[in-house]
Length: 210
Length: 210
DNA sequence: CTAACCTTGTGAATTTTATAACAAGTTAAA
DNA sequence: TTTAACTTGTTATAAAATTCACAAGGTTAG
Image (cartoon, rainbow over the protein chains, first blue to last red):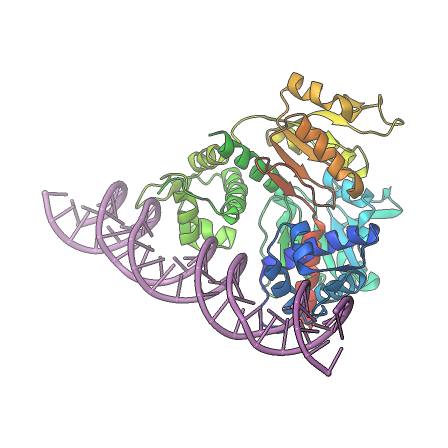
């Protein structure tokens, strides 16, 4: 198959496949069929084959998929087989937690600069990084090769943060602030709010009780 | 309309609507049409009306929706117009960050107990809570009225944590660990991994560049 | 009271996504 | 070498979600 439009749901599932495949590696499993992988991911095996078909042919008929190879192929397909430098705006509770969360590096996302407009925070050091005023974003972005922006401001500051990022020529944004933002259409934005998942579980539990 | 099966995507959007509506309240806007709300949420207005129709009739024809009323209606529909008591298992980096993240209470989710099997951590106090061995989960869950479990262990401990939660009669699970878990089918599980969103942005940026 | 105008709620049409089914390729054993 | 047993990649089918289009209900101005 290859290329054409790729459903966002497919991207989400590819992330799941990677997760499960990495755990298989840890268990020493080297080859897996789409059927087995499907069970481990709680999806349909056709789904997996179709998701992968968007990007190429990664399996061997009669055999299955070589786990390590497949991980590499999926990572290449997603464009995460390389380093992405990020800037974080909003060093509050959540921003601080993310800066301390060292999984970012492990997954190839390096937070190279932290910004906040609070004068009390500017100049302070955190995780080996100086907190800087967002007016300097543009300079630092090009200097440090920053491509992605992470917004962790309060909701009423999210748009201003987005404007700074766009102005600095950032290519994509992950917005943890509980507010929608407007940016030019060529800049992808993803919204993260893990309370969505709490709501969903609460809803399902409520439904089950009624 | 009312009831029948409700798409998971609808639940996700309802969470978005609440977010946008709450920001409208802050701006003093009291009434809004599905068309205006749709623009603010970047969705189709029919989508909004249909999503809401699953749960009832909340608008006034010729007028629109009363913002505050609509928020209340959606919260009731989702079952989040009340307090949910939670237990957290795995007091590592991420678990600690969540315990410190006071938005949980603001949104009606109270983490009433924290568990970890590391002897070095057991007995220590954190955010006014004593870290306890997971073997005591069952007792504490019933005692404290805990209904939801939050897993923040390393991936290889996630299943064991899930087993403890199921054994304790928990009704739903939010799993932050990067591993799939198996639980009885009547217990809803939601997986949270904000790297999914980073992957998605990275992918879209990569796609745009090619 | 009437007419012109809005906006919701919803059935029908469309588009998208997921599943099933199978031909084609691979391995292993006889 | 042939056959039986697997498993992928892909086409065809089915299901689901989204968008359209409009009747029904409601509001405002004259």
